[in-house]
Image (cartoon, rainbow, N blue to C red; front, side, top):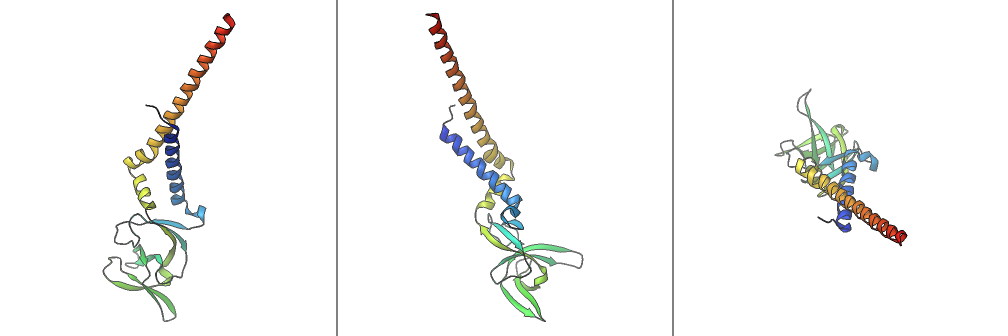
Length: 178
């Protein structure tokens, strides 16, 4: 199987893209963000499946912002939910946000003190790549296969150079015998 240079370059580009996205997802502070969130089909997440959202810690939000909230279930038990702020109001000199409940069936007002962060930027589809990388087939397809193609190309390149050196050596040897 002969690997062409364009195939090696394509594999290298895929590998660089996968590594870059993985690093940015794991270390969003490299881009100045505080967290990276993935959209999923969970009831506690308002992001679309496959979206990735980069957030900044804040204690204020606006209508339409996607925020991460600490929602108290009991005095000792809390859940973290990602919700879009539907509306804002000031009640008893405290800013509150109207969001969907954790079950998603109703809305409630929650204090700005429960707001952890808001999404600064959301990117569609990239989250699907992160989900794929979390699986064995995804790792094989997006990491192992490009590495194999690159390695195979480099081995073939070394073999060509060795064969070329051997044929030049034979020509030199013939030259001296004359």
